[in-house]
Amino acid sequence: MMDFLTSRAFKGTVFVLLVAGLIILPFFLRPFGLLLVAMWMVHAVAALGLNLTLGYAGQISMAQGAFVGIGAYCTGLMTLAGVPYPVAFLCSGALCFAIGWILGYPALRVQHHYLAFVTLAFSTLVFLVMRNEEWLTNGIYGLTDIPRPILFGWNTGKAKDFYFFTLLMTSILAFCVWWIIRSPWGRAFVALRENPVRALSLGVDTRRYTLMAFAMGSSIGGFAGALYAPLVQFFEPNSFSLTLSLKLLLMVIVGGAGTFFGPFIGAATEVLLPEWLRIAQGYYLIIYAMLVMVLMMFCPTGIIGLGERLISHLRQKKISSERSAQAQVMGTDKPGQKEGAGQ
Amino acid sequence: MTPVLQVTNIRKQFGGLTAVDGVSFSVNEGEILGIIGPNGSGKSTLFNCVLGQLQPTEGEVRVDGQLVTGLRPCDLNRLGVSRTFQLLQVFPQLSVRDNLILAGQEHKGSMGTRLFGARDAGLTMDANRMIEFFRLSHVADEKAGGLSYGQQKLLDAAMAFMAGPRLVLLDEPAGGVNLTMLGHLRERLQAINAEQNATFVVIEHNMEFVMALCDRIIVLAEGKVIAEGTPDAIRSNPEVIEAYLGH
Image (tube, rainbow over all chains, first blue to last red; front, side, top):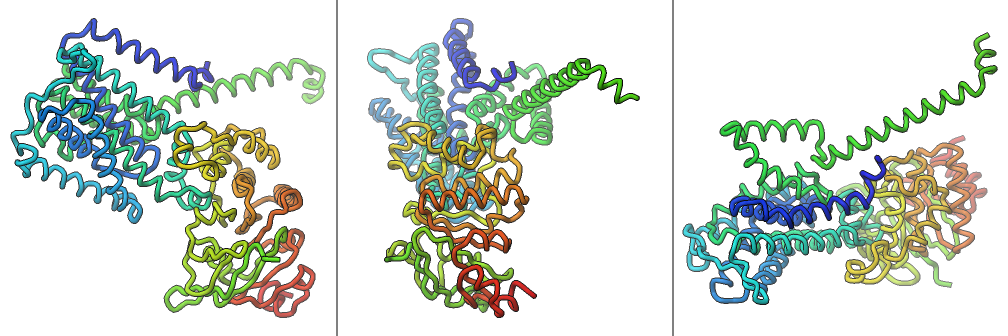
């Protein structure tokens, strides 16, 4: 049982059940519920990107919210100008890839909290551009009436249709991330996080992988922004302030950095939990903050890490009970020896 | 015959301190060269200059006749130069097998093929062979961080050999290893040397280990070479006895 809980078959089953659940969910939810679950998926995609940069490659970034913003503005501006959505979607990812690559250069020189401040400064810079450069972004008024895409005759304008479109894109992007982390690149990213000096001595070009980790993570953030724009259809610069970057960071840490499902769970605690805890009214934030503090104190590896610790504990318990049972059997098999020992 | 490694007049200064002062030596194919000397004599700094971790102030390094001074460690590794470190350097969150696959994957294909190709980069068989060779089969799927110190030391050495290097530089491979594991490690290194004609340079403080393993030894003191010769010649060299071995 314990082995099954950690097996690939179990993880695959969870994934299939999750997708199946998300497919049937719209038939039981109202439009607001659909919007909420779609919002969870968009945040999960953005957190997946940050997880690649931070959780796997160990490069701290406090700019993921800015990349979501760049992606959203890119898609918003292009689709409002009449560019087809697929082109705008791809451009958002490509633009964030290029900017992320450039932002990766400071990571070649500085690490940890110094790098955090570099990315924080970038995040502020992007926010200022979005707010002040009115000719480009419409300033504090933001972008309105962003159209939802029509793809091969499929109009995603209605809530249910756009929900399914978000689910499809989330599945594709999650598959891409899963593919990267299970490939030799994923192994190289982990090596970069755990011991860059040793990795370099084994032929891992840490410079190129660092830049790639930033570029890919940022690009996925850009794709999340490209989904966010037609989902909400209206946004302004405050949607992508530093708060969003901090929230995404929290999603990755609380869910479990360096695990595939961590960002999904982290995004659920940040997007869905507030709705479920509405009953607590104003106390929600207090409850949430206390839960995070307790989690970080006792399980810094996040909710996934908590699950893994539980499984490991149960497995140890099972092994020791098996050993004691075995010892008992051996003891009863040799009664003569036992009696002899007693004399 | 061109030596596998040719180090000429390497000097490394840190401000006013000269850590390595004009060291030259060469290593031929299949040879095991030992470098010994008291703490602070410049052995590890010399290693780091040879391996591109530090830029030497002066001098040059050639591998198979090719100038490699100042080349990045990853580029040097792809030329067939591998190393181990004084302190354990495994990847604790990866399994033993994944540690070994990682040690070989960057020698296979391009960045593109590594992204779109097989997860193991076609290295599972090679990794399994190395696991068997270093007798780590019973822990092959364990996370490296959960192994004993001796097992991690074996894994560390195994990683250095994973890509079939031409030259391996081992920095204190016997440090902190118990006697049983030490004999096992020496025997494995000698077997690889015999089977693959691999060339080694070994820094070591354990005299018994280094005398039994090496064909030739150079002795460093205060950043300079004070003696060079066979283990027997070094053992009886009065200058070495005075500076390092003691009476």
